[in-house]
Length: 101
Image (cartoon, rainbow, N blue to C red; front, side, top):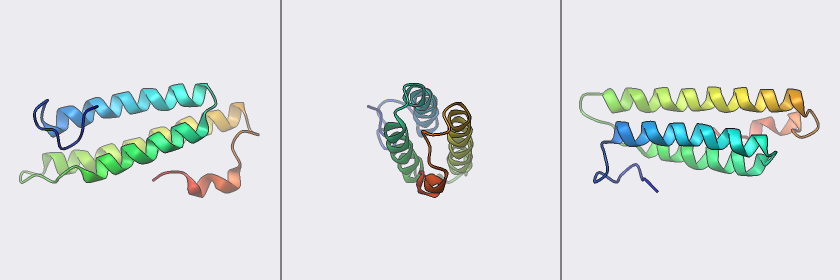
């Protein structure tokens, strides 16, 4: 696994960019197999990892961190909405506030 603090592999922007792509694909796989708890768990871990990325002096990684967080919320919400439309009984709408973020 790549960690946000592991500088031996690549810089933080490259590592977190790759983690975003992997996480987005994992969300799709979890939700396609109707494993909502696993998707939510993965999203929580990924959001915590994004938030733990350190801010940099020039602000590039800082700006990207908040962009990644916003994109993650947007994509996860879109995937949940699509799943709710396909399988309305799978997601209890009253529990939506409990999803990661």
